[in-house]
Length: 364
Image 1 (spheres, rainbow, N blue to C red):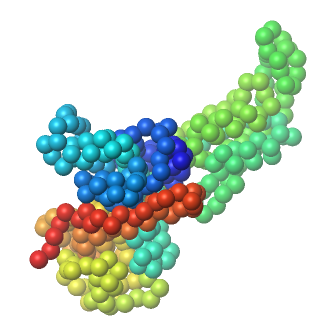
Image 2: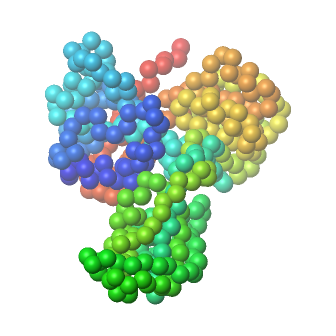
Image 3: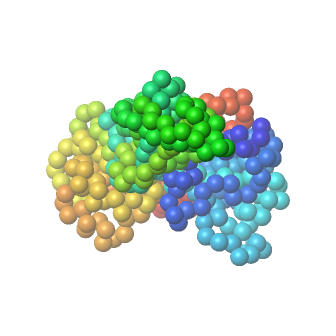
């Protein structure tokens, strides 16, 4: 298996453009064209995980957290990051990280947590802006359907729970080709006034290059007139955190018992009980205290995340049950997402969920 084939599927699921500006997702060691014989899937890539990969004859590690997060100025083994990278390179092991881009897609980390809790009616808690663009082009009416369908197939026209979305408007276009032109309609050197259809479609910016390619390949004109607009609309499919509902509301203490069971928790930190049932739940894998106000504004009964600082618990202001279950604990199921992506596309490729517990926090 060529590594690029696996990378392509991972980035279809969680495009690199959806990572946060501070992040370092993607291929960290190795080469895209190298042959890979097995993948070890984990939350953190540590020395112990690299050793496990060696034992299992895996020359690819797919991790949620990037082992190289900030710049490396030297590689002499003075800390665990350098030692991990050195060991991987020495054994020709590629390391690929899929972090905040996997957090931000609606089928990623937070959906996995929601599914483990059995939540329904899930939605992104804090949708992002500037993800969407609009394509406007002009085409003869008898070529409209062919062009529109090609753009749909390239990824345009998806809005929320709907696909094949577009808008058309009839009008008249004018043009005159010079002596070097080869017009599809009309004659060179003569002004042409032609009935045309204005076609508008929304698309995710990540698909822009393939949509423009489809436009040019399927439009009959020699010179294709089109405009692309950046939209400020929030996009419900990309963003931070998630909300959902339990099938049946349950008391607060029973909800905490559910969390203990699902996430195998030894203890839970939380704000004071509000003496009400839990029905709507907000959550964010990893460090999610920054979304507490969003959770309150979503009218959720509880908010699950991790890494709350002492004073941030006060910010709940008795409006929500804020629950800190631990960073590792919220994201422990993330490697299952990698396994599902790879096994669905490459069912005979060897991929393994790590047996190494990389949680750096111990409980006494």
